[in-house]
Amino acid sequence: MIYSITGELVYADPNMAAVNVNGIAFQCDISLNTFQHLGSTGSTVTLYTYMNFKQDGVDLLGFYDRFEVDAFKMLTGVSGVGPKAALAILSEMDPAKLTLAIAAGDYKAITRAKGVGPKAAQRIVLELKDKVAKNLEGGTASDTFVAATTATAAGNSNAADAVGALVMLGYSQSEAAVAVGKLDQTLSTEELIKLALKALS
Image 1 (cartoon, one colour):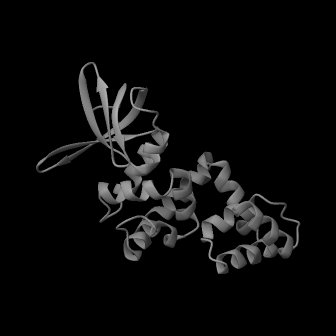
Image 2: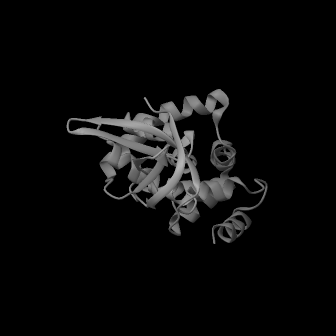
Image 3: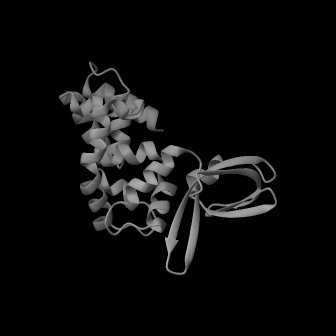
């Protein structure tokens, strides 16, 4: 198995990158998230890799960091979610936002990914929510998630009302939770909404 490749970036687009390693250019399928982290053509890059074995060959997938690889593996472990759908999801949201959406039960955020419908998104949340929760209990929660869940998990009614109001205004549950969770939880609902809207804009 290939853990990672490091070499000269000879080509990149939002779906694929080619990295020249000692005269051999490896073609890797990538997410938009990884593409946005790549340097310009000619620069030296490192991609963490995953090999997808198919009946008609092998695809090499490249990721900007190990967190994205882990998120990809987690997604493809869900029944009915293949590599293409997993890359589409990771093109729509980075691993931290994906974790937050799953933990918050925000399947609608996942449906923004191209080709991922409500049923598939709900299945992802259903199958991964407990796994994400165990990771959080084990102390691997990101600062973003901790901040986001402070508002709702702590039983703060003002914060919960503010999150609800932001959702009514068109923001996703996870986006609203992040914005409100970073604020002073002693503020009134109106103040929380005002400051969260300012942050979201």
